[in-house]
Image (cartoon, rainbow over all chains, first blue to last red; front, side, top):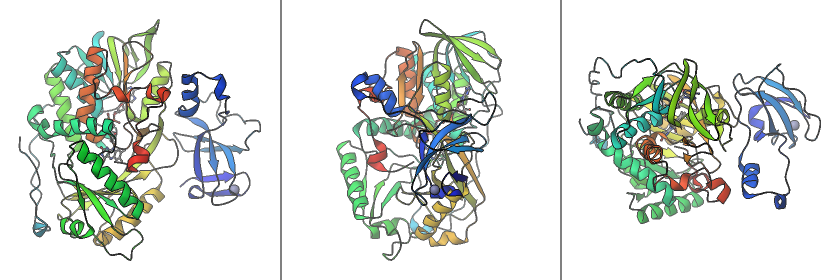
Length: 97
Length: 421
Ligand SMILES: Cc1cc2nc3c(=O)[nH]c(=O)nc-3n(C[C@H](O)[C@H](O)[C@H](O)COP(=O)(O)OP(=O)(O)OC[C@H]3O[C@@H](n4cnc5c(N)ncnc54)[C@H](O)[C@@H]3O)c2cc1C
Ligand SMILES: [Zn+2]
């Protein structure tokens, strides 16, 4: 069970949260996109081996979405940050994104 | 090879002893050094990579061929899964490819000359609510239309088949009925990998372990070989069959695929007397259980919520699945958990596989089997071999091309079945 730092409520058990995959994917203007660009927006999300900035929602607490750096190999937790704020650097020098 | 179709009647439960395993031949496959060049290279020595190699050699006469595996043969999901085999999927496209695979299973031991303990003991899929009953019955009718064997059982019929199951009404998830596929079953997974490896090696395929593919030689949109931890190897065609690591392989080749990698766990009990002679699945409560040849109860759990390459999952996922299993099978309360483990599975948005060409010429992909690809091991390799040999997909895997995410023609088995394995 991961301990996840909700920016609003502090450290809580993983099973109070739902996962939302890659963070920071902006909603594009569908009229501006080709079919394959739209497919990419809909279906492709980062899936790196290493640090990943991802979304979580604290459904059993404050109910709010936030972003979190987490390592997909070691399960280390990095900094959490609020949507639409500046993304902190990935915790490790030269880490993959 | 023997047909290990299970003939246990419920009355015989508890009295059956496991037969000893047959002797292994002194050598299953040859240990070789990689050549400088091959006609084709398969990246990934799991079940699907090995079966692809075997059918390329056997069906298409392509034997100047290597399987390149970063770890050891059968160290991935092929030997981490709960071995449930069935073909009773909802959509026509899925039923067709899984049924093709099940037909291949039915003669596989004879074909490969190697025993795999393929046992058609039937697969029960339980329904626990009114809406669950509705969707399972829809599935059952769809199977009938596709000539896939399937039956609808009442709770009493379920109890007759599985005497140890609890069908009382006053539980959290009562049994309201089930679909039953008599031709479904299980097999011994590592032996499946070894059988394909042996048969491929006998036909001249090089099996190269401990060698990671770290890049591709791609010029003007065409692949000419792979870069590995043992040096560069040239190849006319390359097939990526990397299961949970497929998104990383695609990135190495310069494109992205809609795959997320998640841990999926399973567990076994110590060896017990036989108490369960069919496979019981319940998507709603995340219980998948069968009793293996030697007597251990084999149970699958759900996936963890997040992306991971750690080959392990959270213990709360195991606890959740065991709580549900104990309600269905109160007798399991006295069994112990001997071992738990995890594998990294490759999940596509529609929970269906991706098999076919890629944006790079002569580079092919086979992935996205997620939580349920063991049963497809023969069929997946069969159509992948056809696709690589001919440069165009077989009719069975044409609907599973990468371009379905652009056309919108998804094959949504997630929503359809809600069943993992
Ligand atoms: C716990 C669990 C339970 C499951 N239960 C069932 C079930 O009951 N029924 C069912 O049908 N399916 C089940 N599955 C799913 C099934 O195991 C998989 O869909 C299937 O095994 C995937 O194909 P594979 O055998 O080729 O994968 P793998 O055995 O994982 O093979 C992929 C191989 O590629 C190699 N590789 C990756 N990257 C590279 C690289 N860069 N260079 C070289 N080699 C590389 C890996 O090391 C690995 O050996 C389950 C899976 C798990 C984890
Ligand atoms: Zn919170």
